[in-house]
Amino acid sequence: MKYLAWAMLLITLVACNEEDGGYIDIEDNERLTVAIPSNFPPMVYQIEENPPTRYGFELGKKLFYDGKLSANGFISCGFCHEQRFSFTHHGHQFSHGIDDKEGTRNTPSIANMAFFSEFAWDGATSHLDLFPIIPITNEVEMGETMTGVLEKLRADSDYQKAFKAAFEDGGVNHENFLKAIAQFMVMMVSYNSKYDKYVRNEDGVALTEEELHGLHIFQQKCASCHTTDLFSDGSFRNNGLPPNPGINDIGRAEVSGSVNDNHKFKVPSLRNVTLTAPYMHDGRFGSLESVLNFYQNGVQDSPTLDPLLKTEEGFGISMNDAEKMALIAFLGTLTDEEFINDERFAEY
Image (tube, rainbow, N blue to C red):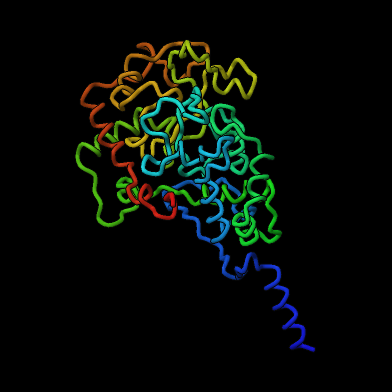
């Protein structure tokens, strides 16, 4: 009886996992290790609720780079989030979506998302699993519906097999779809820049005199908002940027409904910042020099201007040309070449 039971179990496993002649070994779907660097704060994402696995990650990657997620079958998540630019749309002021429609915001990086609690420039969602819904259903980005996406995936035998391999229930459904993409993004941890190796005392890495000067200035003048080694506190602030009259983007207030949040946007991480131009939520600045010039003499007062930018002398951040050059030198140490060249995240 014992041998008969084992034989029946084996037959059941094979029958449940065969698809078009293929065989999936459930035991091969091992759990992946997510990097949590020693110089980072704790991860916010509840990893035990959706632990990345080999097949879940592979499915998430396949979905991330698949134009099927858009209405015209061409625009994928990876279209606007390019790895070599820290998963931003470098050189594009605004995102370009289906039928070359143009949005109203610059594409932010999606590195280290698992360490934050709110997403998008205005914090439109507070759960990473739900984040993909925003661009997929946006009429000028991917212009699709979640129902439409799932219909296309269910009609694809390769996706049927991939979902069956990644999840115990094997369902091609909303929950598994969102979990798979989240598993891909959770693994996107950028933590091996020159700066990281310096602060962790790895590989004998040292900063130059100018870079160290820039770090000192950064700690004095920038670290109140760009906190921790994530280089963002994840908050929403009005940094005094004059509103773009052609857009009328009120930022966080669109989500909260409060006038106290007018023109507040999420503080972006500065990791890989030399790769992610143009800058600000509306991509108005093409260089870091322009950004620092703005903070020096372009900050505009308003009822919601962040108090940190109000001084006895006026508004903004006081700095001279030498300090700005040192700051830019320091920001260059935040570029993570290993991350932007990591084959795990590369398009097929």
